[in-house]
Image 1: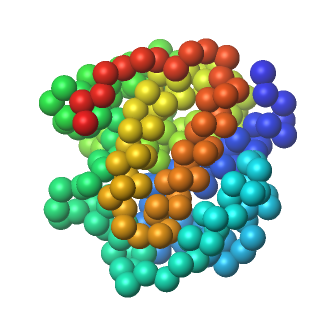
Image 2: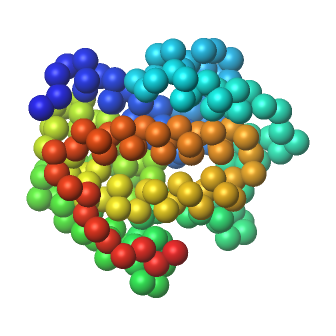
Length: 204
């Protein structure tokens, strides 16, 4: 059982990461976060040891020939094939498709637990950023058991592979550093889980 301060710090980091992986960097939701990560000493407030974050903070400020919105378009939207698709079923389904069996399993789990999470029309719920935001919502509402289940059953089984490929393919210092921050944060969360992470076959 997390106490109030643990829930708050967990939800804070989950919401920041979720928004930055889900929304365009110049959007209303993500733009203030991008400014904070590129213009402040945010690592002093992140719930991880600062010494592991200082290199990431420096990388986020590194100039790039590619603009941040262009990098986000290339990595998350297309029009070309995404180098590291951010949906769980792409990694967990034998055919690497959207709305695969793992997405249906997530939907079933959400129904069984009375979780209604509003998505854009006809969009899979297992987007990497969406799952972070859902984890934040669960923590904010004191639903620790469901939060742990979400992480152990529906995010952590594929996130390490997604992030490894994403880091190799991102080619933009901000997004490489963001993915490394997600790696460190997820590892910290996993270390506190009370249930084991599900072992699932990865197909990419």
